[in-house]
Image 1 (cartoon, rainbow, N blue to C red):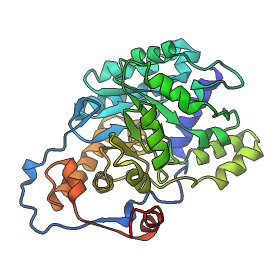
Image 2 (cartoon, rainbow, N blue to C red):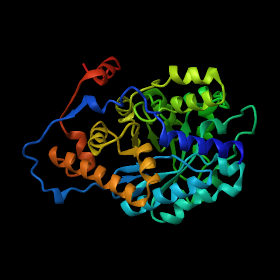
Image 3 (cartoon, one colour):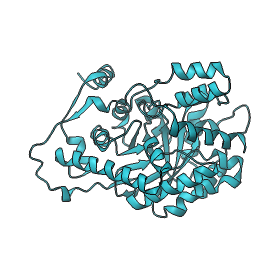
Amino acid sequence: MNEVEARKLEHLEVATTLDVNTHRGPGWQDIHLLHQPLPELDVEELNLSIELLGRRLRYPVVISAMTGGHERAHELNAILARAAQRFGLAMGLGSQRAALKDPNLAYTYRVAREQAPDALLIANIGAAQLIPQSRPQPLTVDQLQGLVEMIGADALAIHLNWLEEAIQTEGDRRARGCLEAIEHVAHSIRVPLIVKETGAGLSRPVGKRAIEAGAAALDVGGVGGTSFAAVEAIRAERRGDARGARLGDVFRDWGIPTAVAVVEVADLGRPVVATGGLRTGLDAAKALALGATAVGIARPLLQAAVQGDDALAAWLTQFLEELRVAMFLTGSARPEQLRQARRVITGETAAWLQQLGYLK
């Protein structure tokens, strides 16, 4: 097992079994959708489908990028992909760097297309791999196109995980030239490019720069769900790396709460995926009301997938029913109509938005 493969397996173990949630919430607790006593529609009228990157999804849900690169990931990606196919969802794969290092691991990613022939699939690589680091050379456009073709992907996500890299014992910490590299990829790759954060949130200025560079969609990946600082703190402690363990504890809650990040980028003219701390369908309704196009779910689905196809299907069925009821009780026949739903914002989220100029 090579270094990257071992790290992916450890990430999976830590993320599914240990306490790695942020201590701060994503902000959904501060968003209150006003009840519509006369919704004037029937539940049967609700249509939860959306369009994302030119594809029609049955529900506004993305199975967020999580895993790949080892045998256990093959099993879990197969389960997740079958759910994407069954429910008509989009699905992102975990970083495909492991398959570049060892092509024999490509099957752990390729299984997604095998099990979800009709789903919108999203290939994935880290921004750190686009620029020179201390070890390997940056990836070429041909290599990135190869990752897309590996899984028959409909889009490529470049993930911004500099918080994780800063803490990770073996992390890549050179970030200069990243935006230029993203722009080069966006104008060279043959599928739409998604720029996504992985738990520290996107800000409005960065969202603007990403779009100017060619991003076709943004995934906010905000604070409130899994903390990769916490994940790396656990890994650092296991290795006797006092520096990483301490940094992971200090920066566990670093970043922009997901609800705030959605508001920051919602009106920039590109689809927005709200990822970070989505635990109920009501959370999803609130994210859509703030301007998200779809919501991304990671750790809860991964934990359900560990239990098998039936457990994952049951989790998604309940989540979607909660979203459906929230839409009904706000009189919203379609996901985009939630943007017109009246709402009250309180607490820490209101304070954030007020200081950022969104609330008077």
